[in-house]
Image (cartoon, rainbow, N blue to C red; front, side, top):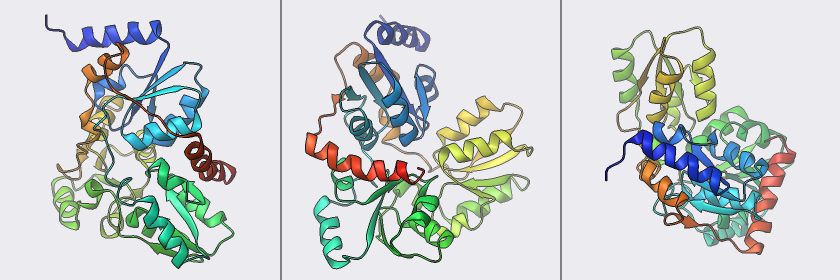
Length: 307
């Protein structure tokens, strides 16, 4: 027997209450998933929310590194990734041994890891950052020499804001954001000449330089909601365009590029969430105690510095 979206949502809401499940949904998830989530937002914000919930099981509707971060901050909880194939190409661009080799080559460099990294990479880094806290945290570090991993575009944005730091970048990053070009900016502005351009710092510097605002996903959404302007071109995953259209129906939101689609974020379906709640889907995240303890250090350092 077929089910409607509303019927699936109702069954998820019933099961999560019955089975003591907290559902986390990253902002790039589909609207029907956000509607049944207990918490929505950026990856680190979700991890903090998970640590505060009393639920014994946490279901992450996002990608693998996000579920790992939840497990690092809440090792006593059962953490399930709703879609086992939902990875993050940026998080997985470098292996732990790659970073260890770089640390040997540059022993006087502090290793700053974007939150979009695997648990294994976090174990060999000095401090973690989010896109919204990166500038503040890097500016507070005692070390002048910084090795920023893995996103070179976010790293370049940080380097511009922290000219007193010597920041070494790797050729890594988000392939979805990095694929947006100045041509896309020109085309979008030609179509919507009165719209403000809001972009994520994972975009290439040439695109970021054209923006009226550069910030994290939450930063972009907050800016658009609070602004007295009524038209915006959104330079991040296109699900944010849709979410903002629901949040501010009196305003107009346009995608910077139709190619700003994360196939990994789209891997999770509402029925995947239902299957997880029924106990027949997803993948439980298992990390060793050693990995949790070592990866937690760079997150604790971020918290200490105000992240």
